[in-house]
Image 1 (cartoon, rainbow, N blue to C red):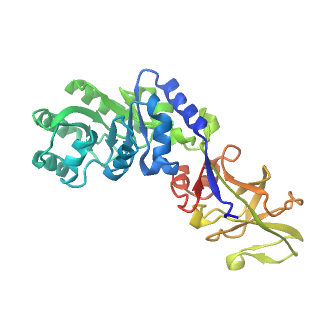
Image 2 (image 1 turned 30 degrees about the vertical axis):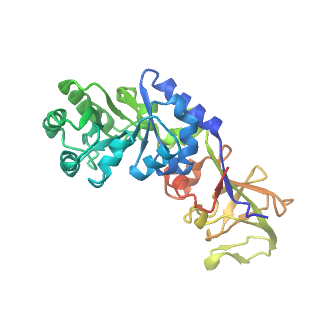
Amino acid sequence: MARPTHALIDIAALQNNLQRVKSCAPTQRVMAVIKANAYNHGAVKVANALESNVDAFAVCCLEEALELRDADIKKPIVLLEGAFHIDELPVIAHHDLQIVIAMSKQLEQLVKAKLEKPIHIWLKVDTGMHRLGFSPNDIEQIYKFLKQNQQVENIYLMSHLACADDRQDKMTEQQTEIFNQLVQSLNIEESSLANSAGILGWPQTHADWVRPGIMLYGASPFVNSVAIDEGLQPVMQLQSALISVKRLRKGEAIGYGAAWHSPQNMPVGVVAIGYADGYPRKAPSGTPVLVNGRRVPLIGRVSMDMITVDLRTQPNARIGDPVVLWGKSLPVEEIASLAETIAYELLCNVGSRVEMF
């Protein structure tokens, strides 16, 4: 018998979430963000499921793009961090990939590279996030420089929102104003600003292309919100099973550091999942877990391969009973909040030994 820990990927939920994107941005083109192995949902699987209904895909780097091309994904693919070395540019051109240019070094590499055909460029402007991107004051000069470069086929403009996850934060409006002014002044044909939060909460950011990421996978991009609040369906269900059920006597401790003591004689379950599988080590006692579809609290510290749960409300639980760590009935956002992190990290951190179905 194999270890019972695995993740179920719901393609119907994924497609539902794409339709939610389109309901919010019905006239925009969709660039589905499937970097980091599609937030650990399987990049090829997700690309195959979405390809007929999106206009492009976005990944982090060349290696991620080539995985998709090797799997016969033919839609445009954008490298969000562009090329890291000049030697990558001929490969990028050969495979009809598009790149983001966000810093001077990338401009220099493009000028020096010898390409078999021109490539599409997404010129990134820093509208306030101050991570990657050129200053708005420099964009006009860089744009004109690229227009004159014979190795460039088309130039689109993009930026990234820093605070769109907070519907009350005014920074999104400020970034949008800066971005729109540049689009108008340069007469840009196509542009992209909106991430998942922008798509759902800030229609003025939609521009020509939207870039859904976390919302495709059925998690809310907003603070103090879960998927169902935003009309989204969780795509990943992380599950395992009870591998032990025992009784503790009042006052007995459990787990590393003897951090939790039994308040009374009680049943305790051991679940085959731990931080090596991606379950957050910082999840505190009281974090909900579903046993046979009902909530029970985590007790004690999360171990590398196991967690323990309080079964007082499940006195008939037995070895082999199913356990859900997050999914449709247990929002990943709730677990992330209790573990002092975000849903993105939990999804991306699911371990390689957790089989996906």
